[in-house]
Image (cartoon, rainbow, N blue to C red; front, side, top):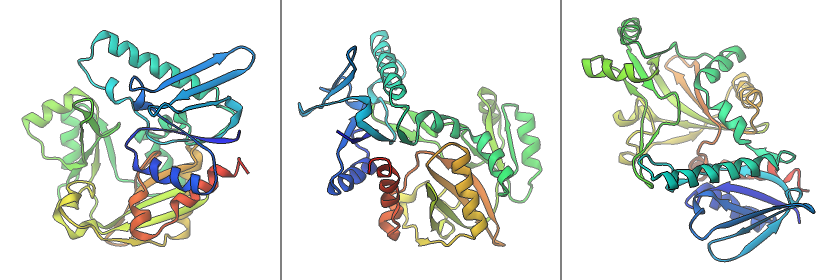
Length: 327
């Protein structure tokens, strides 16, 4: 049995969409929703006389396979929702660690297959400082950046940009878990120093960047050697001018297909490749004088909305990458 494995979560629309397309093409898919643990999902891994894995899904269907039956894995934003919050009981916290350990073991036994992307590569690629250094080495312009938890240094940095000012961005995942199912997003925001802000800076290192006036923003999705660029006209609305993700539900953001300059396109491919990834969602801005500036790369970023809006064939590129090893 040759199968693709999707490691994801219950409510991921990207996983739903791609899984249906794979099945329509006659490809066998095994889906593991990591947030189904302790919710009528059972897993069994037997070792001795070969390695055998059995997954019993919440609908009572059982799927059995060996690690060598799996030919590729799509690692699409899995999470353990009921184990992620603070204030857990010691038993619940222990169960969460045991599940994470099991998943790590499952990942290690599938080291022979193609991953989009391997979680260890994802983890390395999420390093914002490393991203900026790599983009600059490859030849892309980046914003002037300071990482500090020293309010004095942050204030000095702000004074370097008296006209445009600076913005704050998170160094890590920009979500704060508030309950087992609710998250609060931390968006890129302009910085004004105050006693309260200075106190908050002391708590942990903060990433500050010069604010660069932009004509528009770009979401560049790279899948292997294929590049799909979407222009986001974020400057048409005050609510989305600093961070297009912020309050986008209040406005209708216009999107257009963007044809990248060949050197920028190749730079994006190289960033993904050198980070050890197959897939990457890159955010760029285009300045008022037409220059491209790299902001960041998300190794597990969203892409479905631009496929639907602009007819970009990102899902087909992902399927092509996954099935190359199963043909």
